[in-house]
Length: 146
Image (cartoon, rainbow, N blue to C red):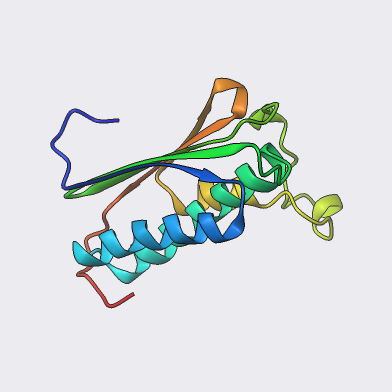
């Protein structure tokens, strides 16, 4: 993920289930709290990673329990990187409709990628859209209870 030494790392393969996603998200947030990341960063990471995991389970793997979600996370003193992959058909992230367009304001769904882009410093996709790469730099605020 990055050449700098990490302070914490997580590599998991989880079932396409919300409970498994919640457990891995809780583990990531606990690591950030342990390293005194600010509450605003915890909120941003929580929202973006939750959206990425939800998209992998629901849209990528279609809730198929036989399909897995991979989660690779690396925490450095001032940066968090997370890669979440699914076994679905993939998608073109450039073709995701603009959820702020007036015709889409009442449409269900379609906000996950926009939320990830709003709350992370970097969001990119690979493997034909099956893997999302999230990056967040630690803000200058002091750590909080989150």
